[in-house]
Image (tube, rainbow over all chains, first blue to last red; front, top):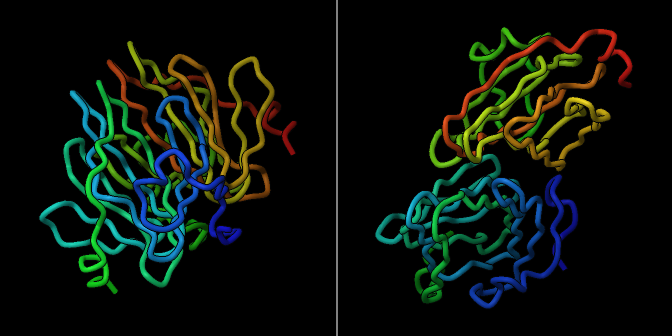
Length: 136
Length: 136
């Protein structure tokens, strides 16, 4: 079970929507499906999602608003960025990336699905232990 | 000055962008201007904005994600809705409404400007003391 009261937002249920593309356990709570669909995503320590791309013909992509714990975001070919509560990450459509918790910390972020045309997610290979274990 | 550490998000500066349409002092922090422009808005106790409408030809409107304190949202012709941390408010384009703090509490919400075509805000009359003072 996810730790309770990580933040003011609900943890929700085990992530059965995209959980097969995560290493470790994640949880998903729908905050709203209207306007800009908004979810709260909780990662147990060391949980991260696979490399993936938000494709869109126009607009699209994702925004993360970090609300609890400590985590990481990495865009392909760039240095990993350590994430803390209050941080905002802009992920434009077309950018290959992953995000998840630090090894020793739960992590929680709100995820906003930026409106666009013909939006779809392409799930790719996992972040290897070799890559992930370089992170503190 | 706004109280520090109301939440994990910055309070920012006195709201000089729309402050003239508020009763009481409000503060504004830009979280991001990319993708979905996102701000943190802080209201001192009893501070509220005037009735206003987010106009758009398509899409548009605003979303509020409440992060600290206690406040109110009211759509024209509807009962006021009391707001607490973790609450999300969907405000479609074209809906006349106001939002702000409770009398005895600071209030803070993230505001998301939902993308749309020909978006503009129409500021209207203040929420009268008679209306506001009915709220607890």
